[in-house]
Amino acid sequence: MTEPIVKPLTLHIGAQIDGVNLTQPLNENTITLIRAALLKWKVIFFRNQNLDHSQHIRFARYFGSPTPGHVIFGSDETYPEIYSVAKHRTANARRAPVIHSWTNWHTDITAAINPPFASILRGVVVPPYGGDTYWTNTAKAYQSLSPTLQRFLDTLRCVHQYAPSVDSATENTADQYEKQVGKTTFISEHPLVAIHPESGERLLYISPDFVDSIVGLSPTESRAMLEMLWQHLVRNEFTVRFKWEEGSIAFWDNRATAHLAPADIFDSDFDRQFYRITLQGEIPVGVDGKPSTAISGQPIEPV
Image 1 (cartoon, rainbow, N blue to C red):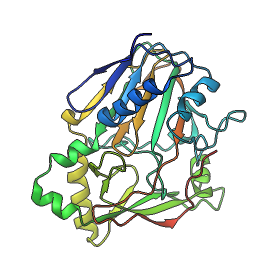
Image 2: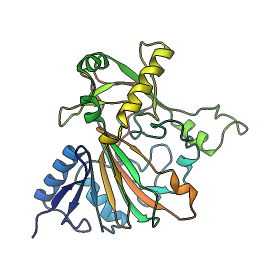
Image 3: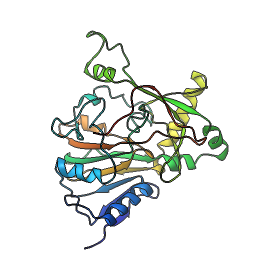
Image 4: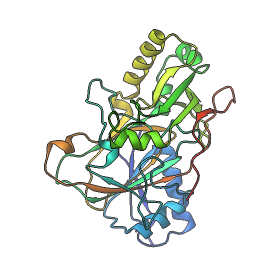
């Protein structure tokens, strides 16, 4: 049996793993190799893996406990671990127009007290071109800051929020997206710099889609600091761009990355159908050893 081969795609993030068949059960050596590659490269990719839902779930369970497909927008009726990432799903109804380089970049559900550890996304119906996804390495982004700024950021905390932007109590002011978000509001205070629980790396924990403010700074100071950090976070040298094919799988460490889902898919008539599983995560901890605190919402539990 040949050993899987890890092929880095950039200097700082992303690797493709060849020589493994994810439709079959995996041995301990292969599982160990995949997890090590995930920790080192932050996001790993597989090609030509035409999994069904059951095989997708089996693969995910080698690495953690699946959560409900999406704690806001629901799950597959038969497979509660599976979330359908369809082109016109409800979660895309309020996608922000691209204004800044960091617009729509995010780390999944950081407004929860225990955001997901990882996500595993598989492409089933894939456009022939367009629809690429980007990831950025938040550990490398932190390491690239000056020591003086690092020391200041190590002391800060941010409020992350996943809540409706309008009053969702009435039919007149809320669309379907707002109603869904309003059912489960997550607000948490996380360290701006979190410690990776396995690698010990320091991470810029500043998901652009979810961070509302920096605790203790004025609104003007908070916004200026966040915009500077967000622009830094998505610098090209920290990122990898992945071109999807039918049967492609992306497996990313949600603690150490942010990602950008494609917006260009809405400019074409091509269909796009993906499926995702998320794995239960831990409560983030800061440089000072203090964990995050929940303001609203319960921890995300496994299925």
